[in-house]
Length: 307
Length: 249
Image (cartoon, rainbow over all chains, first blue to last red; front, side, top):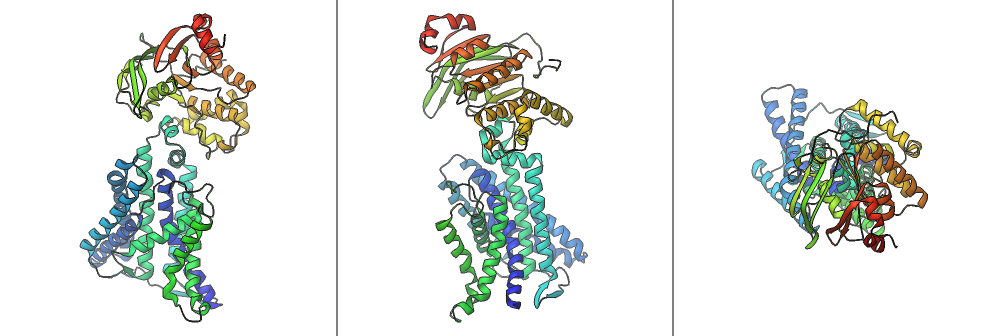
């Protein structure tokens, strides 16, 4: 029972991070019908920027809370600029090209960003500074620590905030209108390029926060960390129904739980033949299963015919 | 009607819209081969013709969704050449597109607010919203329903009300009667007349030529990308060529 509860806690925390990243995939897909495979690298850049800022600020003796706040803002701003730039340079010129062209470009951008990050930050794993005294709490025999609590609550708050933006503001209305019918949106006076840019920036800001969360949770940052995380968040978005915001959140949390419970029990289930190091298998097993049995995802209304 | 006119009618001598030798090509087809037309302030002008004559292409070009290959479009004395579609809305140009283009996954009220996207006079927007519900009481009943769940006629009302929410000076309607039951067609055309009487300039594209010419002041007949005939609606309704080709006479 303790193991079960522990895996639930771990799964929800990891899943809330997946959800934040999955939202970035799903927002861009919803509006452009494009899978932005470079999105995982934006998460990585967010973590790396925060790492550099934190290390420098803490080194100068800035109070930790202030350093965290500033690093967060810097990482978000940097990622928003990066997201804007990626769309502007790599995707906009291909807006009317066949679907395969922007997809390949996305993979290209992803590789470029990985290599740039490797040149700037090196190939080694970086220890991510411990931000707060990380007290563990005992619940029913399972452990949850302060950082995990902060990650989970913050992620939920950000998702709630995003829903308010999308469903209650003029920008959100414009985003939904552009996602549904670009020509009609233009006829309403919407500058669709501006709305698309803002969508990329919003998704990238979430990615930056997610990157910091992952690094703070595991205490590590690495130039390659965005690859697997990005693929898993993409899986989460597909699981929930790509293009659907609630789907991305649900998919993220579910994927976190599946992965975590799977890793916790795979040893028992296979009689010790496979261990928890097979954790990553679950995400892709889920991806394949969804694509085979329910390509529209859990909450998707229509088939992802444009993917 | 004690309401002020729906449109913003800035007054000056020249026509509201003036099109000279307009040519449009897309996908390798020369869809519009050089047409002239104009709309005076407060005029209701019909553009009729058979399928594929270039009527929709003309409207899309005027709205800025397509770019002309040649010719001039002047609106309120200004060239529209370098003005993007979304920038034409605050200038007073609104198009109710063919097939209505309502945002199915937005509610009725959200659709109407999208129409007011280029405005920021919150109080006046609320006033106009109330006027739309007076003009189309059915929409008031369904304001929180997703627009995609409405009937075709109700969606046409959403599309028209949404366009009016931008306070246009020139309202362009593409096939407002398409796919609607006769009773609904009657209702929509009554509304068009009502709006026109309040002084708005309207360019109406219709396959139902008789209906269009009955409400319009003037008309243009389009055929294979050219305007072949123009004149007062009464003349066109009486002309042999129009009778034969479009009125089944």
